[in-house]
Image (cartoon, rainbow, N blue to C red; front, side, top):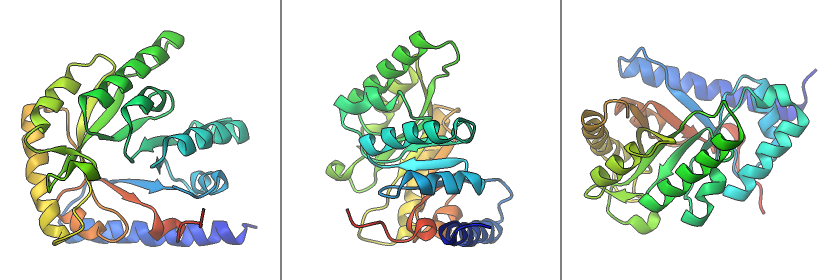
Length: 242
């Protein structure tokens, strides 16, 4: 028997996967899209339930919360922990980037050379301690409206940041991430971002990832070519009050 929370998560997860499949079919796509389940403010018990339901990618927004969950999952079930890929999807302060590199398997929100440098140093430190540490895949977060206070690098500064990240020994430039501006049509924002992502791929052929789309705009993101959606509320429900 499963507990009620597991049943709820299983139902929500299945519905979200059905949405993804329908969106891919509507867009005429046959490729696979990563589903990152964002567990911000939800307990590690939910991460355990999701992993047992087959979720591979778990996303976190906050550095300290994420590090605690990584440790708690490893302590609870080391085998299950090895099946989870931890994605940092939130804003990273440059003074915390080194720590993020110690637990993250992929970072979606690199917005500056300082953050990239901290991640590179943290990954180098980890590689000194272990023999099996690959470069950390990172995506550059684009600010579509140029308001970098909300996170992201301006499109004007993106090429220089991409070149910088590509030159770092312990990072792999994997693509572009975007959070649409609050104002305007999400589909138009994603189409705009897709053009920028294509330009990034032309300059850096390995940067094929396009992380776009959340609970409310999965379909628009998939239509624009998203290779990864970051879904929280649609699967976990409302965030707990903290």
